[in-house]
Image: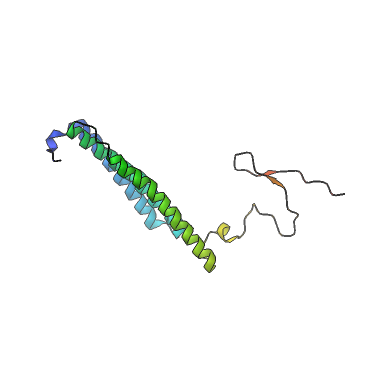
Amino acid sequence: MTFDHADVPLWAAILGSALLLVGAALTLIGTFGLVRLGSFYERIHAPTLGTSWGAGGMVLGSMVIFSAASARPVVHEILIWAFVTITTPVTLMMLGRAALYRDRSENNPGTLPEKAMGGPDPDRQKEGERPETVAPGDGSGHRVEMPQPESR
């Protein structure tokens, strides 16, 4: 389908252009995060922002412009956004898990966070201490200590 740019109303051109620019800016921010962050585990978060929200802005801008130009709703682009939004985080999660498995099996201490290697963790008990009984929590993410039974 072809159309003349004069067929797009001014309000749709401004709104569509703004959404396209916001989407492109979010994608650029995700790219900067990918370049600037240090380790692989930090880098896998930035592309998710760029592709999910950036693609969403660009798809919405495209929908506004083409809907206004063709005088009918153009919603098939939502499928593009849905596929990108669903597949990118899942793919990066799988890459992260594969890298974590590889680094654990090869025992690469320099590439993993300390918690992933079983290193010092303030929530863990100290060696030689009696293990404490801990309730699952109150839903706030804080640990709840249960009273220890008295020894007789």
